[in-house]
Length: 453
Image (spheres, rainbow, N blue to C red):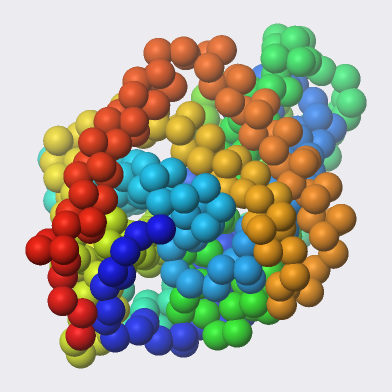
């Protein structure tokens, strides 16, 4: 167990069910909903199989949400997977997860989302490519400042942004159907695959991977469990509500896209957005839909930048990272130094422009840790079967088994597609072991202990 955790003013529990559920839905609903359905529709070549994949992955995501909800209720403090891995598998495994998040995955995803937002903004206003990096960095720094100023204010802003985002997507759905700008004949044949589609099994495998990553981020809300009121009850409900909203939105938007654009006209993910926009709104449709994409991605980035720094903060509180990062802002009570660290590394990656390849190397490891976290649920039940958590153990055992089956399938597919990337990602994560040993050595050295307040 980590020794001598850092004491500091506790982060306030200010967030309720609405903010937590909005965080789940807000982070998941991003650019993926506009790009993924195109690739899925083209490879599957069947409206039936397209909707079936969304339902299957939605059900499996719901299984994962049940498991994370129980873990959040058992261990209601900030840090998410880091906390659960530490409780179930010890500090070494938790440190490796935090090491991956801190130096690679979180800043890389932050840079990717910010650059995506900036790119679509530049498309709307005809800005030169050189302006994209400056806009992306400005977005990251602005959100970092907002999160530093107040978690409650930031969460309130993003809650409203999320519900507005869902409202805009529903408005697009109503617009398409009320004004009959599409054709129901696009769904015929409904079951059979169209000519030019991939063979069914490879198409299903690829579509499930794409759908899984479109749902990605739903687990991040558990990183702010320490800031949620009555987390034992609120977190499980927020996880379920958020995932149900995401599943419903993805199904509706996919139906609308097939209604607007025949599957045989789909040429690429990017042109699909312009095609759908033109059908909906005419010549300016591409820019209008691009504005909707900016709206969605900005909300996802904002939620991610609230959640991610809580891992570094939790690590520092446990004495597994720089003690300075465990300090909250003296006035605002937020983990300001952890937020600044994420924003600084992300800005550097934006300048270097290397985040895309970096993320690709660590997707396998991220999915592995996700599965390991859910597997920890079995360990936690063995160690502490009697808890205050009022949930049906048998139901969650089935949910965990279903979700772990999906994770195992994804890991196999990722290795089969590119063995080199998972191998290098694993090696980079394992490279954090010497740093962990050094950190533990400092903890065990009495002369290196940090005085507690």
